[in-house]
Length: 77
Image (cartoon, rainbow, N blue to C red; front, side):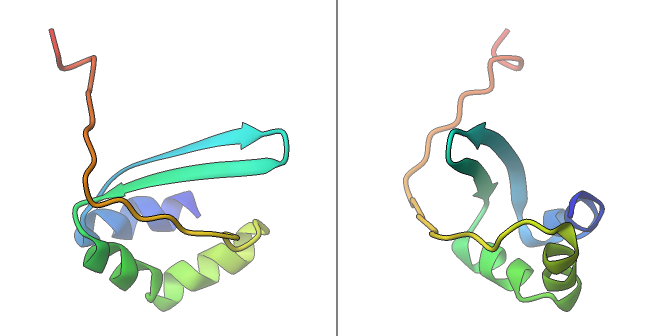
């Protein structure tokens, strides 16, 4: 999905995405400016098509947090 995500996601307020392998699968953490932007992004047909082509399973669960603190250590100099 990366080419589609990289091209379209910023228009909807995507900030960053982190994916890590776990013993029982994958975990992806996406940081968005707003819930509305994230929801609108996932409704785009090309995003849904990219998800299907990727071969990755659809997320089993979603957890949304409204109070998030991000520390960027590279910019904290």
